Length: 87
Image 1: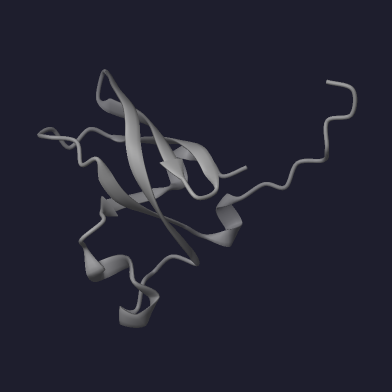
Image 2 (image 1 turned 135 degrees about the horizontal axis):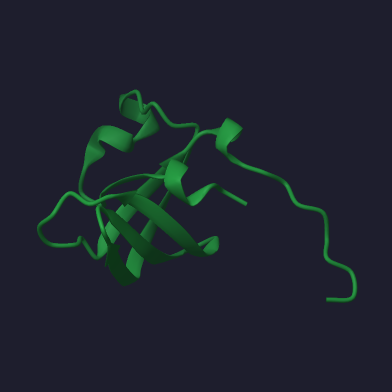
């Protein structure tokens, strides 16, 4: 599980998150925003990625929501959960 508020979000066309140009994140994937909700100053989004759907929570920047994005995160922001037997 990746903490939703720890994901870094950039437009898909932004080269800043590319590891080849010195990205500050350990991991990177692309995604498409499928749902977005403003809650006060926060923007909560569901993003479809090759890893499945991920929830993203970030401070609202205002303006249009980019449908095609890159998500970056660091190893320390992940939690490995044990299997849920019988649920």
